[in-house]
Image (cartoon, rainbow, N blue to C red; front, side, top):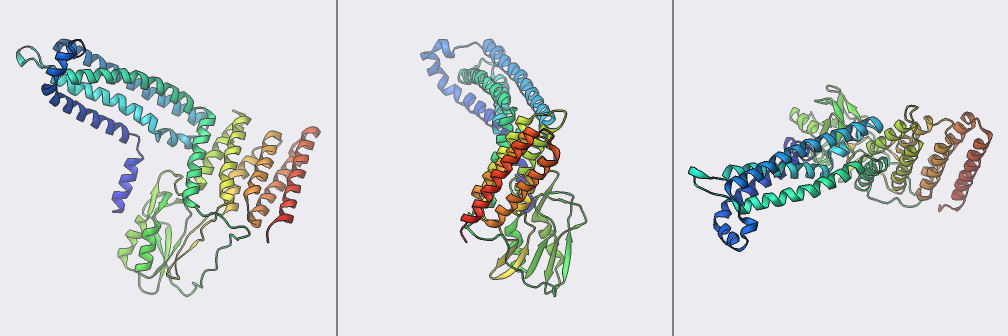
Length: 442
């Protein structure tokens, strides 16, 4: 079952699935129209002879022309996609290429063109003339003409889509949208005012004998089947402790999880425990919110590099990182200790708000010494996030980042006027946090 689930997820996220579906539907439509043509073409031909009437040679030439044109358009479309991928990789980050490959619009356009080509091939094969017995599937030929006309509009749409999708704002907004969806899926519960992130204490586990289960392949942890792990732990009276957080790299043969049990561990449990973890060559954002943040940070760092020096793109990344962190600041993070019927069953490796905040802003701040625009934007973002951080501990973490920005500005900005601007903004942020502590609800 797990193998089938992994195979289905790989197929569903592939680039070729949607085009293949279009090709299959086109071949089916061609077969159906050709089969139905013998029953309906006489009536349609008698009513609209100029619209549906065509000789076998004329129909064959038209369908051949459409098929050849579709292959040329498919080649141009693939070339445009490859150029867009190369530009995005060199200008922004190679980690965002999956958002291009997963674009349903691009896949559907390629599928429509490939499907039209396949449709024309099937119809051409059925056209007969001369000694073979004349047969012209007029309805099928007319539908091929409709597909060709629609392809012109779809090509225009694709040109607009590909030119818009490589713009910095579109790329950053798309990556941020995936991260926000992951936040809603992983952290659906709002955080109550004054509550704590501190997880409840775990029971003493010193008396348990732990046995490490090794990973059966190397790669990044994409997903964890928590339901399967919980079922195994409950059924076999286990306590499972994860060695790695979501998105971390695991090496084949090194410990993946540790299992504690009051009885000898059955060798048949090793494979199910390993199959609960989806390990692949790359990270995904569905269960790994840190990767969504990482992609935005990578784009910002690339923009701040001396060879590019695109401050505006870096500011856009900070703005969208702020959007993600604002949502995280008001959400409750799950405890690493998972229970079934009051008994501890799983101990996970969870990232907290402090870790994700550092993931978002540390490298950007460290890459921006003397950059007044970036430092001012970071101060603005930290204050914005603090307005939604209902927990005092999270506001304290945010205030610590304000001090880090202030310290960097004091030692890296040479111009007195620019240093004064940052110092004024730091004073405003400090005053904001002071007021927040005075008015907070106990």
